Length: 85
Image (cartoon, rainbow, N blue to C red; front, side, top):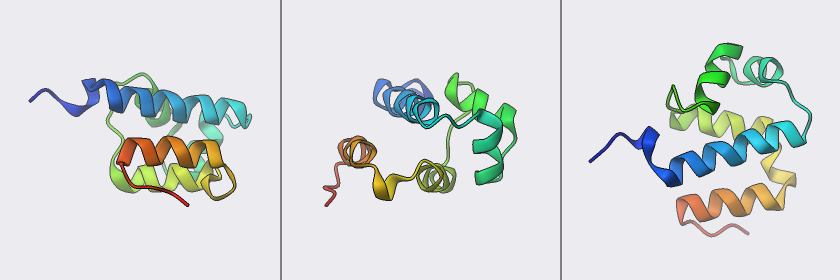
């Protein structure tokens, strides 16, 4: 099995997270501060140079306001296979 960082489903999720960050007008530095990472970590995640771990994923979702964002909820639901709602 190849590394998950190269999985198309994983890359599509990370791209959607980056798109959402941009849509919300949150800089990589601001997001990094909110989740306890460095700006370079966010950049590496978005460029598929560093894998996002599950705890970081949860913090990113909170920072990207998933509770009030039905589009992001649907993306995460599709990725995980767990229905939202």
